[in-house]
Length: 175
Image (tube, rainbow, N blue to C red; front, side, top):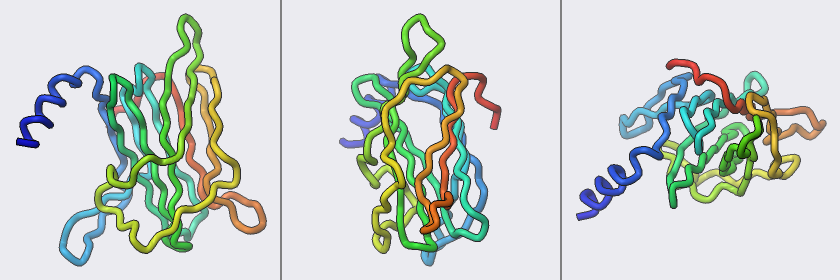
């Protein structure tokens, strides 16, 4: 019965579901042979009408992985992003809703704390602790085609360990 409900939900929301493309930077298998893919970059065809692409940058030598997922609720598409720092045993994440400003070449970015870890398959969170980003992610309005850098983790000396870079608008590159 749950499979039928899920199928109806997909059909009903089909026009709202974006296409998500991710890089396959590294594949590894766990102890049970299941494949696991790290996604350092992603392209989303339409996050509420706005193409979004992203890239995680980390200090060389840092053992990290990043993942993205999207959910649709009440015709609103939400991006969920998580970055795991395996070196320090921490994870960082956020939810993002992007909305185009009517009749202007602007987009409004609404950031929220990561709402759920359950949308990320293949990442083991049991031995990880939530990290604290150097600055809270704040809502903002930016130009369409803007690039936004989000510092997610800094070293003790204040230099960036992990940064997520987002780009809004424009053509989403083919995967």
